[in-house]
Amino acid sequence: MIVRPPSVPARRTVSSEPAAARPNTAAPARPQPKDTFTGAPTAAQRTAKVAAAPAGDHGKLMSEYLTGARPPPADFEKVMGYKPYAIQTKHGQRMQDPFGDASAPGKIGPDKEFDPAAKTHDYGYDILRYYAKKGTPLAPEARKAADAQFRKDLFDYANDQKGFGDRWKFRTWAQIYATAVELNSRVQNYGPP
Image 1 (cartoon, helix red, strand yellow):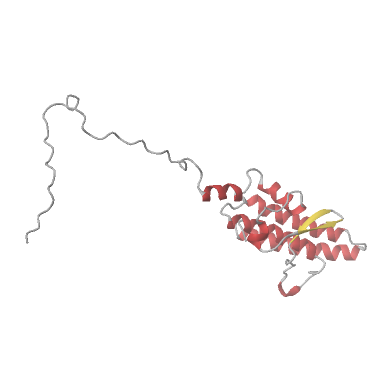
Image 2 (cartoon, helix red, strand yellow; image 1 turned 60 degrees about the horizontal axis):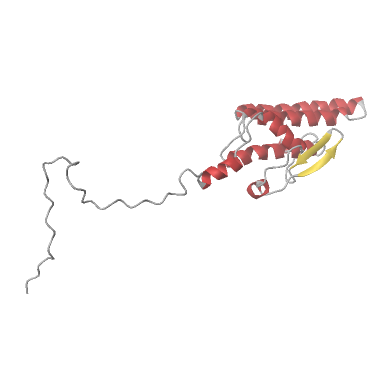
């Protein structure tokens, strides 16, 4: 049995006449449906807009987070694993990391007395980590503001003490704690810890 391929249409001959003079034998082009997604932002772009660090002064932004003037980002609890809470101090409201603490080596110094200031500072550092995880880290001014608030809270506690001896003792420890934190921030180029 001989199998023959089906007949193949003959090749079109190439004409020497100009294309404008030849009759149009090509099938008309079908209209293409418009791609409704062209120009629309991708999911990553939409997420980036939501998660992006707000433009402007990141030092002021950090201060607003630490004092509760600005609520935590909407998905902060989901991303960081906890919900910060507010406390009222003699010097204003402060937001707290419930799992934070004064992490002095060997627990030297007044770590219990400085615990509220440390919990606020830890929350500030978690704000830095949050924005870094989102891919839009805050500017160095944010970490400097968190460290400055920590220093202020430590010295506020020290200056609130009744006796001269207690004030002197807590001011000394406040200087040690604040300086250690600030030096560490400098070593880390004021980026997320």
